[in-house]
Image 1 (cartoon, rainbow, N blue to C red):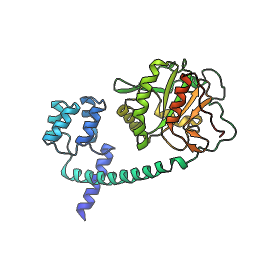
Image 2 (cartoon, rainbow, N blue to C red):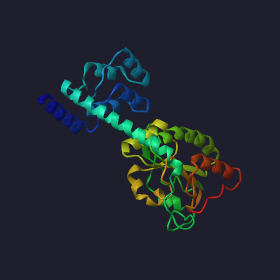
Image 3 (tube, rainbow, N blue to C red):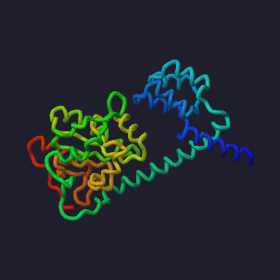
Image 4 (cartoon, rainbow, N blue to C red):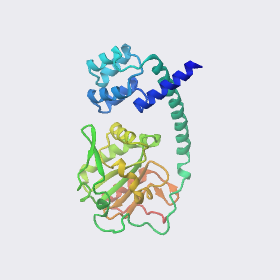
Length: 296
């Protein structure tokens, strides 16, 4: 009984001191491949500690990901390791967390199957501009000072005037926890890299549905998002945008610079997907009108 009480106390200590679970070789490799420097990884290790072992295969994986000899030596020496009791407590918590994530993944799969049955939030009348003061540049004004961008391995403040000359803006509603989103995002990245250089009047803005700043930045790093994003701390203040995204993600919504909605991943109550919006964008670039939106 005392052992379990002690393990519970160690678990509390781990959670209190680290705020997050200790790191494993797999997570360290992912961080390095995502653009974290060895210095940044070392800082994270000092905060969260290390709960794994280093064998030849894992050492090779770390070296391949970009780990320095000094970092690997520190891991082998136990510099960032926990005590035996704390390790046991952490592993127990990690097992609980793994089961929780598995349940969440199962729920996400079921939600995906229901996407086409979901309906857009109830709206009355026809589509309306996003801004209370519609006009040229209304979207840029709505997002002024709230934009960031992934650049040189970090999420940084974007140019205030980044949207002022854009005529077509596609809002991308997505999240790292969403499997269908992570599957679709690389397609959108390829599309953007192909289209944006030829059409400087076009931009994508990421509207995060993530649960934390860390998940938001991790998602941008892992997919190397080349477009703009609404600062995670400002997302909750953008209710007018949240209302047009629909109930399911991934979702794309195309607007003009005044905020008039031109294309959406939803057609009335039917989820048609972001690919439909990409096709409409191509049609606009080809001089054709996008397919008609159903009245909401």
